[in-house]
Amino acid sequence: MSSQDTDRVAELQSALREKMADNKAIADSFRIEDGVVQVDAAQKSAFDQNMRDIKEIKSLISGLQDLGEADSWGAEGGSSVAAAAAAGAGFQAKSLGGGSIGHQFVNSPEFKTLNGGRNGANMPSPFEFAGSLTTYGVKDVYSALPSGTPGEFGTIQRDPIVVPPMRTKRVRDLFPSRTTTAAVIEYFRMIGFTTPGTTATNAAATVAERGTENATAVFGAKPQSSMVFEGHQAPVRTIAHWEAAHRNVLADEPQLRSIIDNELMYGLRLQEDAQILAGDGTGENLTGVLQTAGIQNYAWSAGAVSPQPDTKADAIRRAATLSFLAYYEPTGVVLHPNDWEDMELSKDANGQYLVAVSVALGGEPRLWRIPVVETPAITEGTALVGAFGTAAQLYDREQANIRVSEQHADFFVRNAIVVLAEQRLALAVKRPEAFVAVDFDGAPAPAP
Image (cartoon, rainbow, N blue to C red; front, top):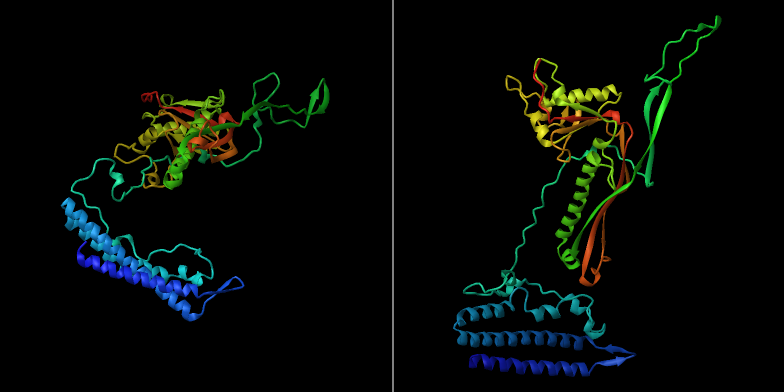
């Protein structure tokens, strides 16, 4: 520090002592009556002004001392110009933009709530400086980046995480929503109308009003049909998975918490589609539609009955006919994206697309008036056509939800948490014959 700056600091320190002495004298003159400090307006004004001056003087002294330290450091290290400039900018900034910090403090609403000490010494809210950090002009200057983690120096810019894409079509969308409070769904499958001792599906027939029996005139007898039922059960199954995370990370990074929640819920939806279609019914698996006994089957290679071999779209239409013949109108088609692509790209001899124009223009995917769900949940080369929601029903025992807990192993002492996603549901396929599994693996038979 130069001798001029030293003298200036000494003058400021002398002025500071005088102001502090004045305020002490004013404070000593305060009267206390019934536990309340009595201060007249003149005393309060003088005391507040002295406080403002004290804060201002201390700020100036601090700035001059910082400047002197920067000069000394620069003289020793050979970078005095940059250091002095940085320190000088910091000192000057304290007197810019709304006054010094001390001046702003004593004039702030927060300080004034103390009412000259009458309301105690605790402000109801913290004081915030009116300037910004950039006002001080503080900046680290490096000739080269130091070793170590770059994140320890300067400001970090964190870009958002790009989450993986998600399936937009779900097999569940083909079912109406229904809930249950039971653990097991019991239901009956009606096999059909049978006449005892025969294989007829329905014994209904026209009947004469009168007839002859043992040479005696009698009224006509009506035939009997028998309804055959099978009892079945659809147990509620649980689909769940979890992820571990550090509690502080999730608290500090809300985006991570959102991604974990969304991905866990999405994982449930993927497994749900797989179970609805192909669950094998063993252990804790659902019995999926494709694994249900009694559904119909149609092979692509068996359908070439016209002058041209059947396309995959033709096979879907013939499978829909089987559902119609079971007296159930199909309400959905589940296709693998590759199979659906083959159908959409099919062209006639003139290069015209064979699939409905509305699909090509981005309309609702439909094939033969039936909604289409394209999903990798079904195996390529297989399709499912049927009366979803009528011949089969999904029951939600517990809809998909997220829970968080520390009660796992030693997670509590490690500040770790478990994020658990879980759902419970049952699937009852009440009329298997209303569903038709289509096999595309065999090549279409040649035209006759």
